[in-house]
Image (cartoon, rainbow, N blue to C red; front, side):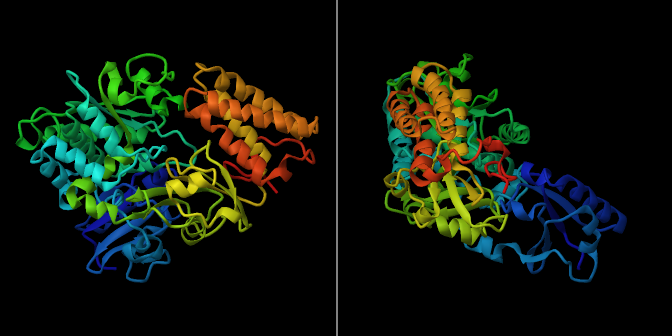
Length: 526
């Protein structure tokens, strides 16, 4: 192989977990030993986790991929013979070529802490344009794009932005909810580690649009790599004048502060997050007032998750009409789908709304990792519905999922083969709610604990019909009486398991804890 100018090795947390640091050291040692005029560049991940560590080499033919790489196989990268782990041009691999990457276009491609790289790949064009626009025009561009909140509810972003901008106040705030706590999700982390300036630019544009001079990124402490990456990126952005009192020499200011959560799932709920930001215990507040009217410190607050804010630069750079070209119906733009569980090709897939769940699981995921048939999938985190194969042809669209009793949530997709015990999974949902409840409302605090007990009685054969009816009644109380989505959505996985997999609730086998199943996070050993 011809001596390359640059060799790219990811330092994304997922890649590091499978040996990327050792691979990077081996690459650096080979460059030094051979006296090559080459540079090692650490990137984020492209999201093809089954190929990590994915090493890329810059050549005249483009960037060639090799993976999953090990330190022992690094020397062969510099040999003239073909490498056994060669993948060809990364962009031409079917798994990547079929995607529509807008938000994640730079992840795994650039040095995430290089503003020069960020600019070279289109960064800061949007902020420069926003600085020349009237605030109302920025808001209307976002509204016209059809962007909906990517944190789970799918609420139209334009309505939030208009409300915050129109509410009279002496100051307003932007809050980025980076407390990514759903099982099977990693898109927020991957973007913060792989393209942090995109999030910073999106927040700055949001501040210009709604009239906020300060923003907060609330990030979970379980993401140490992302925390360090964001802290360094913010410092570099200030030094370069991207944020601060004089953004890009415009005389207009916007500042961002990083805050760490303490591991409470409930702080992913916007009002509990605001309570935590204000220095109190993360507990849900009753609504109204909504955060857009009276949020952080009682001021109008625009609360979005990472992917919602990270979509804004694309909208401003390319225009609302361009963004609306992706997707179907009322679900516009692209969605970051995170494939996990018992799946052969796990990772992040970004596509316009509308591809089917089957296309995702089989076309991108390659079926189950175990080789057994896929029996169920849970979309939308630990409170999403469990769906059977009969529903796999459902398009990934907010309304289509809602019509069938499911939700897209944050785009997490956890697959299960035919060894899964869905009664154990339903029990896990109730137990999860009991553990993570903030304790403020009775249905969530008490109802989830009683739910675990009722499921155990059903599985033990104790008056199964009566207890199943009781479980359904209890789910109704949780759904209608809880203050927030934690208690309100817990019935979704429970009732879907009862509806689609009733045979798993028969007392034919002793209960198995969900975490002990199948060699994955959610499977039962055969």
